[in-house]
Image (cartoon, rainbow, N blue to C red; front, side, top):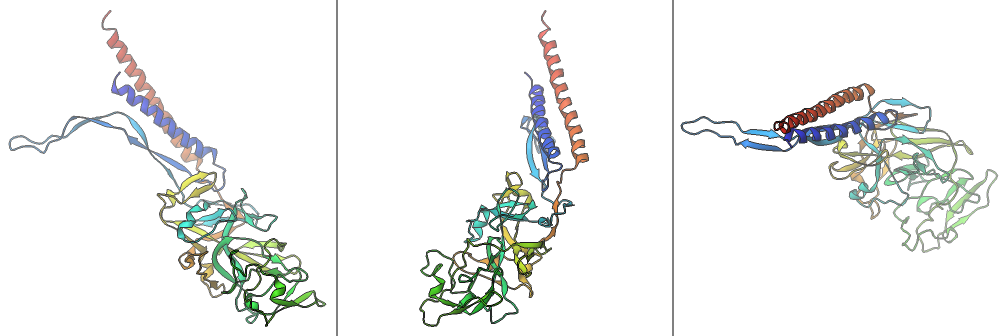
Length: 402
């Protein structure tokens, strides 16, 4: 057997691999959020017949004489560049205009430090909706993470600013609806507050409030801390902190309660999700989508469907709010620094903007893929001819002796 035969065989195998990549791109030409792949051919091993020389005092130098033994797959690359915006008419559909990924995962994932971010799945596909429990999920049921709206620690003293964003990365969920009587809906810091049945109740947040179930004041009985008035004519209940109790933590809102129902939901270019409470007519701000970025977007690892992971090759992963939504005067942010959130100040920064009511189209281009298919077919054809010519030469060699 000759080296040409093996070179031809390697050419057939490698061109077939390239055709697999092209076929995968064409199969996903209408897949929202799909990113095309590209295969790079690489020369195979070389054998050296004559080594190179720099020359001597009497003779000149010579170039090395080498012969190759075919071709192999070099790299199969992802092109994570932003693609075309495709309007869908669904207000909850979103597209990241620029670099970045949405963070999705299970409800119980925590971010204690920056390394924990690598446990999340990354996706460019923003087909979102709220599930029956009020969680923002994608089409596969994975929970979408972001920065939630919480009660301002100064509320209700600063009644013009009753809510504020938290820098803690959490599953985005619709706020709870105030119940009647509203014994579990308590203002942060133990201050008195009034709540109307059906109003949005945001999680309380201050230095005394504990979200750690191992803490002795976690989810304490509200009646140990507060007194509750009877509902007035408007259905409001006044909640007043007791002054004779040694317990200082406010009650944690019941996370299994009914969530508000929203109409006219919209997602702004800054990723902030808002809607109208269908019972009270109030504007409800659910929170802000988080956008993750890596140093090398083309280096993320494809794990399943539209999902990727920031593993070796992608570089450091950071998280920010679209258009710096959490760093503005209109949307001030509480930066949490505790064992659960790690160092969120490092996480919150400006990210690409969001475009709603549409999804990102597939980046596969039919014309480009067909052109690649033609050259791949001709390359495959040439390698088959190489094998047949080599076979003919071997046949002539065998037939020398008749």
